[in-house]
Image 1 (tube, rainbow, N blue to C red):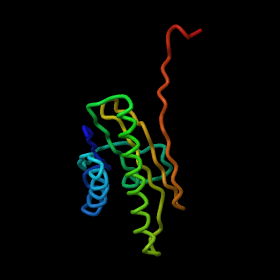
Image 2: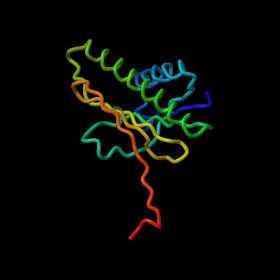
Image 3: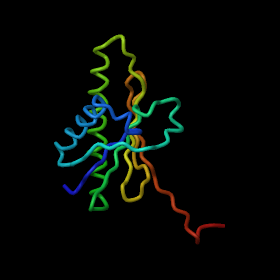
Length: 144
């Protein structure tokens, strides 16, 4: 496949060995579908996530050299693998009753546009919700 992802977290000091190992697990899942990737740190704002910390919001940047239905197929694969990764992490946390599992979000963004295209949320109870963005364009001819 001609797909590549970059998995990012907050600033470099938040990219601990444990976090990097968790992201490497996600990349291993994606490699099973021929999607290569890397882990990086970035500075980003997490406003609008109601107190979720940097580490609980993962951004996957999807880059591709193809377009159209192939992008949707790649998004489906990345979304499914991200959900699988989130479930695996939740199961590990549940093995330790003293650790409370909090909410987690994965946002998939396009490298080309920089815009989010999908978001997957897991709440404190483990319920998964997936969102897709719809692009709305204003046509000059349709404006009144």
